[in-house]
Length: 109
Length: 307
Image (cartoon, rainbow over all chains, first blue to last red; front, side, top):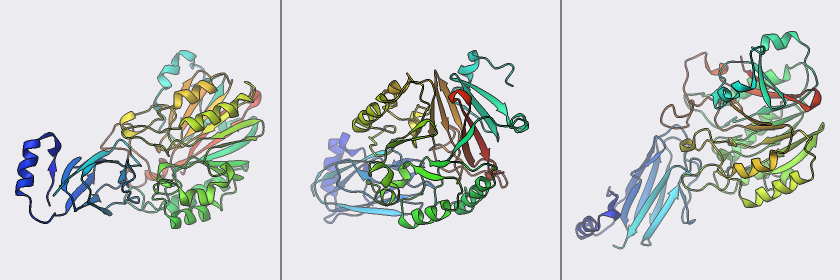
């Protein structure tokens, strides 16, 4: 698992991360618990599969604000995965609880 | 309790949850008067029974807070079917299902078909449209609104308006009606006289109970500005699985209990999820609301729990 929370605010750290990144992207996992995406802010290399797992008894969704990805309603222990191939910033919410927001930042390999 | 009631106490009613079973609220000139059910039972109810509100059936939910939501909906049906007078129509204020799945809608429709409570009217909850477009919801309930979700109709002199506030969520935001629906609402109301009793039903509360939990509707003030000239406005919502009331001028706001599971009081805990209660308590926290037209176009709301 390779997740660096809030990386976008630390360019130097991002540089170091990229310098030491493995040749192939690894999977990244975001847990949904207590009505939060954790980590909320995730940076991954292009080509990474990001998986969300709901650990709440209440269902949640993962819905891109730009229409790039959308999960079904995830019941407890349900998972949703999406591969991020294009560098960019992807904001998403839970469409059932729109107070829940998250960001995936995809950087070039 | 009615003897010492006066308008100055209205402030105390705001955002106050009535957790007890069976309280009758009589609306008179915009002032809410709670009356104990024991007292109400000894008096012959005035006026005609009008309709029933059920909410948040959440068919498909199967967690600890209630592993058998189909069972409690059947109990709800039994409660309604045992009422002395058959309601003329039933309003479901959303979250028919838990996960918007076809099988959940099918089971919900089958269970609600046993209700002997008149024509069924619905608005969607956010759990009913998690695919973004509400395909399964509108396939079953879209006809009345020409697949918009919002619509109005008249019944026994009362103008009913169903609104949708769960389909245009924005990050961090509350429920939203949106410009198109608000324009439709303004037009719909413009043809009504101010003496027409109005009942508005929508899933999410139309006033802000707790913003951080999404318990409110961001552009509801615009909708309320169209409604204020009317002498009797009753707003029925669901979403929060408990009764919360507010009176503002001639507008009464009321949220209904769920038939599936309770939720915590505003701000108590991690978020607005299912509340696990001790064995034997569940049916005391689930129920329905019935609404009766009184003389002079007053509406009386009665909340009844399953036991």
